[in-house]
Image (cartoon, rainbow, N blue to C red; front, top):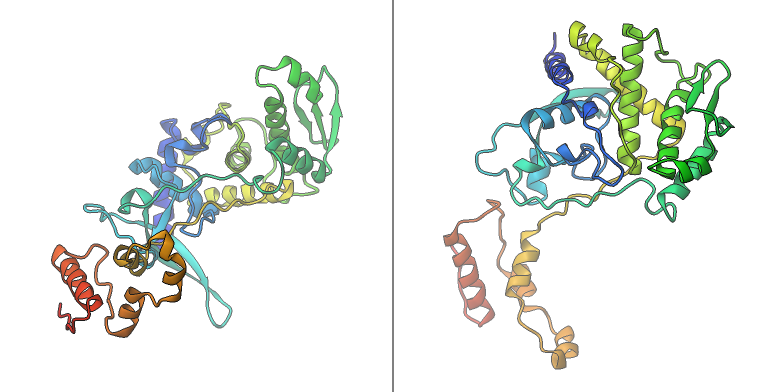
Length: 363
């Protein structure tokens, strides 16, 4: 077994343990008024704000729960250094994931990559959580109405209908939205939650989906189907700001008892992604990690105070700090947190240079 396969099987075993203990990411429900996946800070993302996918996402969520991380951000060592941060003291235990990249000959190669959680990175600012509909519609409900209509799914509305998807006729049976608004404790929100649950089933109809179909309740086939659907519902809720409810039907018992190969978890993760694309749930990019640039911070620290009356005149002058940096001194970033002695030497040399003194800075 390759190193990557051994790592993935180890993660799969951790996930099965969490299922048995009822503390996996699929067991933590949340309301639409709460931050999605608050126990791990949200869906795992890289420094660009784009989400991790498939098995990598499930792996990072499992690791976060296992180690108590509360940040959704994961960064490789070189990304941490590039953005001007450093690993906090005592945080040497990294997380390994499989990273795939395209080679010059067009072939794809997989390598093991080392990354750290945002909780392990010193002074990493918290990112602002955003939803997929923001910027695309006036509000979430308007976005959901449009997205549901674009699916082309066939609905049958009747006040006596319980939410139900009939696979043989490919029809979603629902009470009218007005019934929810006037008679349900959660109002219209309950309507959208029920519709998205049924659409997750609708997206797996054989005419649209070639993966595992529902089986007899309690069967291994049905368990694999439900795992893919639950992962899809978890992402739908986190992307759109909706309520997520765990599936307590007992489907997880097969995974707890048989503990299949990690590839079954990967297939379920890919099935979830297919469901999202079929429904038309857009990806969401969170706020990218803000880089720390030492040169900008130093420039601001040395910048002389400009009085309002002198503002126009100051704009016409050459910034002495910028000229100083570009002229003689080249600062080499050798540490994310330079020593006090280095900092004092740089400040002293800069001040003397600005005052006209010819100084040579030696570190």
